Image (tube, rainbow, N blue to C red; front, side):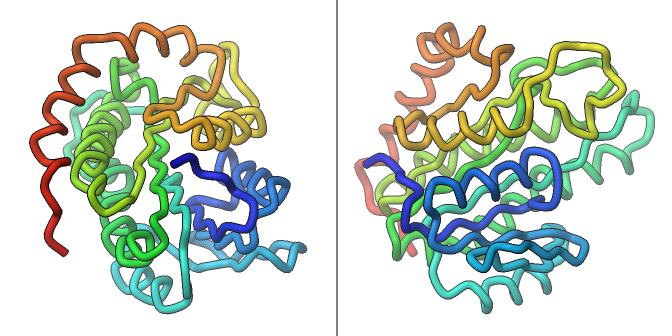
Length: 243
């Protein structure tokens, strides 16, 4: 089944800026009934269909309180992330990236999975083209995104029998705080947000939402690695997954 946005309830983490903020606006434009905007800092929005959630994805207590607030959920978008320049000399920097970009998405997904199972919903993990090849000045970020991509592929196979669809967004350079200092072509957050929802509605497992990432989309979809993902997934998709 495809995932239309109209009339649905959507939760977006990292919703106060960049791609997350654009996703909130695009969800509203497409007729979402309720948009939960998860942010670490206090957040307000003029549209009454937006419900702010204090949600640091590394804070188990905040995740638990968010679950208590959200009555139903159709689409979870794990967008919150951090990106720091480093050279892998400091383990703490790597751990910080994993805490947010991997374990944060994992923790939020597990917490909201009962609601998504009930609705036959969808999970969208905003990873990065760096999941496929690291940018040498942000290796910790790339490592965390590669792990998040593998998590996404694993969840896709494991949750298929529950009727929960799982999408990966392989984003290229986008005009956000992370890339502001880089003199390279960048997509706008708004165009990326539109492409993400288009990809969901077009039933794309892996969404390439910008001009740079689209240059690798066809080769990825026809790759040995993608074929192997489907081959491995067949081992579990025929069997029910225990609750």
